[in-house]
Length: 357
Ligand code: DNO
Image (tube, protein in one colour):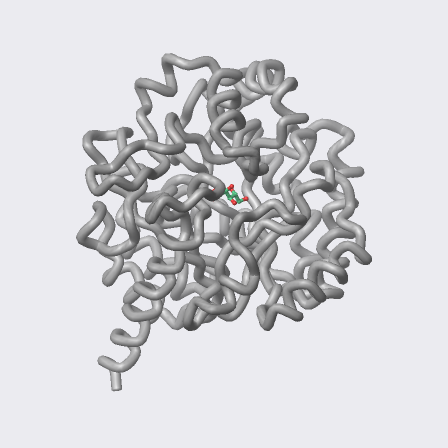
């Protein structure tokens, strides 16, 4: 297992590589080139410079999060082949700089979604929060505005402003698409890309839908054990795997996260884990919380143990943190709470490991 942190390249992060290097036990980072338009090839020279920057801070760059998927692929349009070819060229370039794992998602139109980015918690910190009723009262453009205008000027992953103008039309398109067609488009993508992921030794790790239930009638597919089983059976290569995000899946109270981890880790199909905790006040209403079990609904000991017991040898990152100690940073991605999260998760891992000896 390797513990990493998400870092935003190109001067778009309040957190420095030097600070990340000083978190005990963190060996590397995951990042992305957020200025390359979705669907275009990531140039090798840019990737080599990125690797040099990360390595010279004493950190590894073995994970990319994310190379986003062009909507034409998700829609199954004839133009998808051009974007799939570009995706394959990007995988080849990533392999040349030593990337081993590629996190991506297959969510239609919008990536993750929250109703608030700075919800006040009782300890005086703020956190990302979700309230389904609130979301349904807004229209998608308002949600995009809310996220982009509260991002404190940082790029918000998955919410590229240039795509937002298209949102209304895209949503209509997906509302009239059957979920089965959506699965077929996913299989088409996997069957085209996975052989190259194998060839270049880059493990593909899909991120679950966040939230894991439908909003605005959009198809949601990576949201439960049953659907993840279906996803993994679409293409049975080990290179077709999962980013197991505990907070995304945990937003559906029916998901038993330790059981899900046990099942898919034992099959060697989890390549990357995003570990965070959330606290529900009612169904589909939750705030993100600090990582420890006592702060949220998820039992982090059972989750980490499920990874350990099933031989997980991929990457883990503490996921979103609260904003604490007056930090000014990208919502969810400050330094302090994520550093506490990494330390806590590493502590659990060490205790579980030593208890077995
Ligand atoms: C949000 C992240 C997501 C995630 C993508 C993976 O903070 O968890 O944007 O990176 O869904 O493609």
